[in-house]
Image (cartoon, rainbow over all chains, first blue to last red; front, side, top):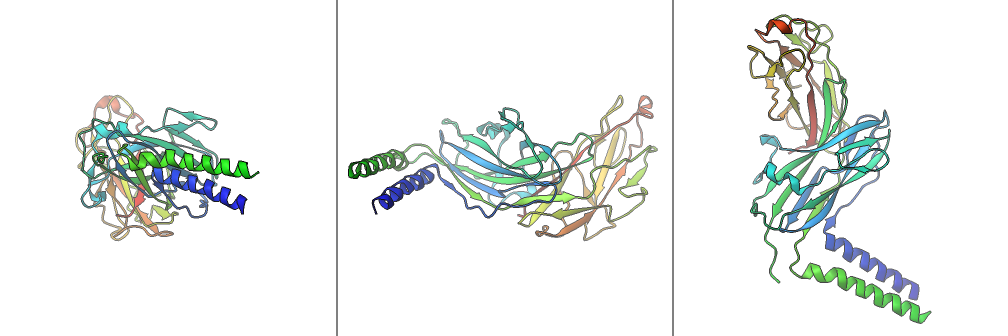
Length: 173
Length: 179
């Protein structure tokens, strides 16, 4: 009984931490890709305050056919891919997101990721909203695109996660 | 033992208050809601050797360079319906690049893709400035396939110094959740 109470208390702390950082995600079982590559998240929604900070995670899933290099970049959505009521995130806001990579052994500043065949790698993307931003109350969309690196190919494959962002004023005390 | 349990409870409650307090106050935050769905596609062809082209030549994506509507096939290997868009680049190499344009011209070339629904109609202009949709009708369902092809039109005029020079371009196919 005493042990149960202690465990419940620890779980309560964990849940509270999760709620504080505002990450709500459910994951199904690990996907298996025979070939090619993909991402584990199709969309993310951000509700941010000026000065806010958090870390988003993007899961890159490599197929079992070969090792791969991919790059991570922010791209403007095509005009026919915009969600109703949203506009493309202005490019001057792209530095709100810090894209990083992985060279197979450690994180890198260059957003280029090495994946072994069958590897699933979660990369972190810190999100930091400037406290003096004037881009407020305007729902915006940006694509986080993962593109294969293949200097010999004419056609490159890419997958993109849609990010929807709205910055709202910090609530009063 | 009792003291240890009481101590751990006090510690847990203290920790909770540390994390709860800022959320209730006016501290700025970024909340994130994630939709966990796999976005993934494959495409059967990765390279295209056009070979030597004459001025104003039209070449189709196919084994023999003639019109063929089933040159390449995209498969949705993810868990969600996707849209597939395409984007091209200028052709680089030699002394002068060829610019991707709506129509072939002086130092400019064009690329047009078809859709599965209209396999003999190459009416999707490939642009360098933005992604354009090549998915059949309304999105490509999970496990679905989409046949597609492209045609290339060479410049109708180019610099003599580029005669015989090797050049290359890249197109990117990008899949994202169907809008």
